[in-house]
Image (cartoon, rainbow, N blue to C red; front, side):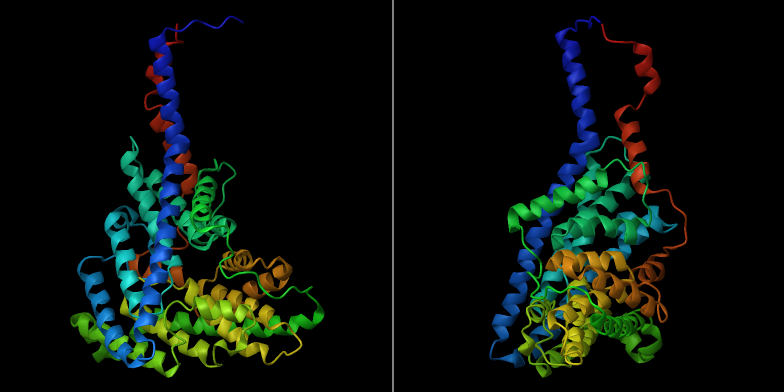
Length: 472
């Protein structure tokens, strides 16, 4: 077969067309994933610095928290309401609403974009500088979705399906970059956000997650989020009892937290609800004062995300926290969420679970304390999110806990079912409460739609292309 000879101009047009196709199919998403990974690493560093600043300032002068925490909490509430509406909470309910709400076309512009990125990072750092119980991982999911949403500006033809695909890829890439857990990012996107998996998936989602993870590894190193767990056990019949106990305990505790967050209008007095609606500065200062009092009473255990406490307990440093730590931390977490400012719950939930594991390990002296802590971390996170696959994979990747695979999986499944007796999944319920998202709504998978959108953008006029005939 003799190939036709092409004029240099034709070769140039063909190369430009192929480069454009490659950009739209691959480079577009890869570049966005690189940006998500970069922002995730920077946000992590800034979050640690903000939290360390607060601890340094109040070191030996805990009474200063009575002024710093209420002031910064009030400032966070005011900034969120005045300039960054849509950045409240962890941000995952916003992503779910963008995927499943009947009003998603009206909601998406107000819930994602540069304004949300600035608010999520800026107000979140202020909250950590004030000692609030804030995790950065959920906000990173929202930030990742917003970064990818902004990438639509570089696409020639933007469709609703493409926007949803960008949000899904950005959210999953954000989780991967925040925790350095690519596998958990994939499962999170399927189980929590998209709620479906299509055989026609073209790898865009998975590629974005991997690229974001690679950026995180390149900048922060190939690290384990909580370090190597000190326990290495072979599951046996004797470990069944700690697993069952941890599952029921953490399932009930996670259900309690969800009830307190979802049903605030039922248990908060009407007078206080009026203050929240009309006097945000007073509301924020009051919540900050309560958080400061709990922090001082706990000896500083409840400040920040709780990462240090969870890591120490996993390393079997039992003297780190007291037995009342998980309840105190749960209280400050509820108060922080009540403020309505940007605040994630992944790290605080894992820390609360570790606290319950510390208490439970005293009842099972024959079992590895680190192993009991690990299963309770999974149990509490699974109870709150009711996403058992994501929960146990996140923890397994963070601690390199493959030896605990079966106990972690069993705890996640049982805890999520226990919590489901009391409350629906937190993220879904918040998405429904705040944005009208319906978990039962049948939607076309965003990944499949993205494939069609890409094809249409690359060849916007197939008929005209066919009429031209082969190049000569």
